[in-house]
Image (cartoon, rainbow, N blue to C red; front, side, top):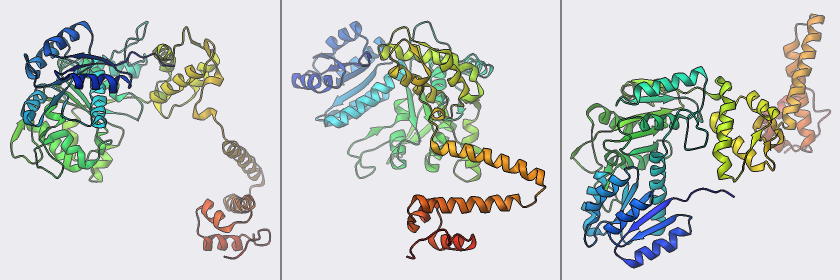
Amino acid sequence: MAFIDPYKILIVDDEKNVLSSFRRIFSEDGYEIFTASTAEEGLAAARQNPIDLLIMDIKMPGMNGLEAFSKFKEIDPAMSVIIMTAYGTVETAVEAMQLGAFDYIIKPFEVPEMKKIMARALEAARLMKTKVEYEPSVEFQGDTIVGASIKMQHIYKMIGQIAGTDISVLLRGESGTGKELVARAIYHHSKRKERPFLAINSAAIPETLLESELFGYEKGAFTDAQESRIGKLEQCNTGTIFFDEIGDMPLSTQSKILRVMEDKTFQKLGSTKTIKVDVRLITATNRNLERLINEGKFREDLYYRLNVVTMTIPPLRERKEDIRLLVSYFIMKYSKELNKNRISIAPDTLKILEGYDWPGNVRELENAVKKALLFCKGNIILPEHIIIAEKIESKEGDLIKQYHRLLGQIIKQRLTDQTTSLYKDIIEETEKTLIAETFKQTQCNQSQVSKILGISRPTLKERINKLGLRRIISFHEE
């Protein structure tokens, strides 16, 4: 069973039925719900409890939501705020968004829609509140970039050099190397650390929605645009936006992002009004941008704008000396969550982890350690608790190894015999064995053999005749 502190959510609304509905519906999701009937009560509650998410009505007796907004942000700038509003006060909600509210929702709202917005707002609050450090402390206190290797020391040095500037940064590296952690470290050590931080995955948002998410839209801009919406860029004004998977961004959106970088302006969908915005861009990709440029899939001018400073995060196989530190860090990180105490790792287990190439990088190692803690019944992680691809050796893998050894023996023999037809002989014998064995395993089902081998039935018949296999393979003509 996991023991994680629940997110703390404060609801401020003068309607008692709204407060009771939130308590009833959202407490079931594991959130710790606080309620207040006035802005003044809400401010008092926020001073006594660290709040992750504030959901506040914009129109209340006494201090209204807009007046209270800035006071809540003084208590905790990293608190996410969702504004509730009626149709008649949408303009006020938009004003709150411009001040830094995460989003707004119109009353009466659908519970599934509210849950989606809340989940995104809580993730934004987590990213802003969890400061990323360079080295782990004695006790787990938050996300940390771990590593003492020369390559990671270089990364730390670059973070220190560029964090305090507004320069654009391009993070490159394979999936799972920790590019988002580096982006957040840059943000948390920058002069914008008290301002919003938004992480946007360019590949996760459908192309048809990406521009409206980023730039916002005016009422009537398209069929479902029933009211004006502020986009992420305007919402994150004076803050930092992290574009992950920038190589997957559509060309049409790339051109608009280029304009934002060049003159810090953009237009909402359906509007001719130019909006000025001040955001720092940090981007990341695991793709070859130079190749995408040659293929016409990425703008060269945007590439040079993004590529002012490039940091390449090394894959784990190139810094295996950090595995021991990472394992200790992940044990410390997940021991509390999984209610495990004083867990250590056996030397043989560590040897297995250090001998693996980790194609999924740090993320794969993290998952392996977490699973090991889950399955570990005692106080020490043993080799049998480790589940990684290399340990799950299939029969197919064993057969391939045997085949490689056999080939080595054949080649060695042919070297002695000084034969010159080895390639032809090996290919022919391999093809014969492959076809014959596949027929045997499928009980001479020609259609299945053709499908497994990935060749057409006419080609299969032609190969059988040419290799002289008809006498040992019987199948029905179809």
